[in-house]
Length: 417
Image 1 (tube, rainbow, N blue to C red):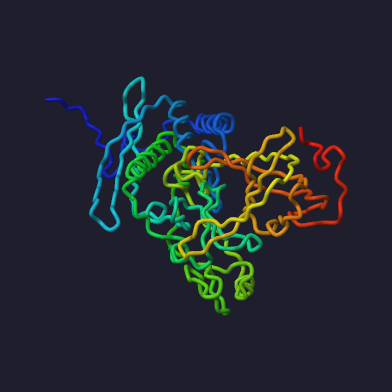
Image 2 (cartoon, one colour):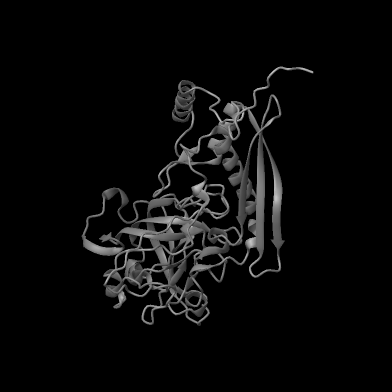
């Protein structure tokens, strides 16, 4: 039997292996932080890999930046759907996904970190959409208020992808449409977008944990929209009631007033509210859309204008097809000939210049600009856009100006072959 004394540790004390201690020196930690900050400054691009959201204390890490950080540290990502709800029968449909992202070292296949991310269709940017007036003819959200000098009414604006149809000021198919923030009736089309957003949030969470960069970056605030009311300091002054989607009884505008409305002065006295940041649920861009997004407004090329001198051969006054209210707008068809002795019809759609095409200007010259268009059957037609001079009279903004002298090289008849 051994008689050696055994020394027992004092009760309540931890051994050196059990005490939590730094795994690196302070100098090494500072060096790694400096290297990481230099990497962010030299390799990551602000606005593409990260960015500062107004009102946040730290930059926000975007998915492209998370991808570059994973590449730098040699990490691969894998995903698991932890929980999901897909209820097509709910009103509106509910899609809710919770994703777990696992980051592992490529060389050793050891797990480095995990991150969680979730997204659902009841988030404000998916549940609601900004509704604009749709054209009853083509279905495009391209309806604008027509200018008074061109007859007013509502126009399906061609530059916004519209068909050019025109409607009366009080057309019920236009003024009775709901505009502004309305519930998205087609959430099912965003199902894949919502799933990918949850996956994206999970990866950014895992990347921040793996790279220990939460002190430099914050979580993906770019994906968060505030649906809760913002608390503002109480004031003794009574605030004006919200305009909302109330329709004006005088000008029929919804949520405001048209420039010539007598009630507009009350609206102008109110300070203009700062718009909230809105992120597209399809492409993820804030306050706009990527060029490839299905909701992006496709810019259409402006019609080419041809400036020429033409001789007016005949004038025919016609009426357009009746609209839904039975109204028929007048227009003029000019039969003209150009310098190349080519005869064609030139249509005058705008009202202001129509009054100047009388029998007196037949066999008279006109310096003008016109555009070309195509009918449904593919045939071309030409529309008068601007008159510079008509029968020796100078024009400005399609209205007669002071008498002008026509240049000798395009005097009446000099262009005929």
